[in-house]
Image 1 (cartoon, rainbow, N blue to C red):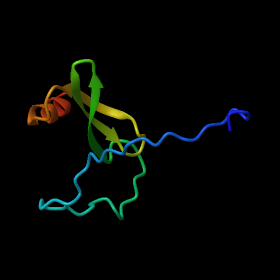
Image 2 (image 1 turned 135 degrees about the horizontal axis):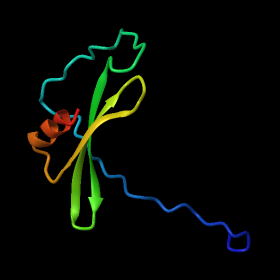
Image 3 (image 1 turned 180 degrees about the horizontal axis):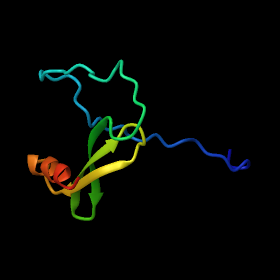
Length: 91
C-alpha cells in the first residue's frame, strides 16, 4: 500500500443527536397529499447547533419548502422558546 500511495479509511465515531424513542405525541404529516405549486405555501423549521470557540450556539431557520430558501432565522445561546419567537418575529 505504501508503494502505491494508498491508505485505509479512518473510521469516524458516529454520534446520535436525535432521540426517536420518546413518549411525546407524534403528529401526522398534514401536507403529505398536497401539491405545492409556489412559494409561501408551506414553511418548515429546523433547529441545529453550531460549534464556536466557546461552545455552541443554536440556529433556528424557517425554510420555504418550494424554493428551499431561508425565510427567517435567529441565533441563540440556549434552546429556549425565545429562540423560536425571535425567528418568527423577524419575518
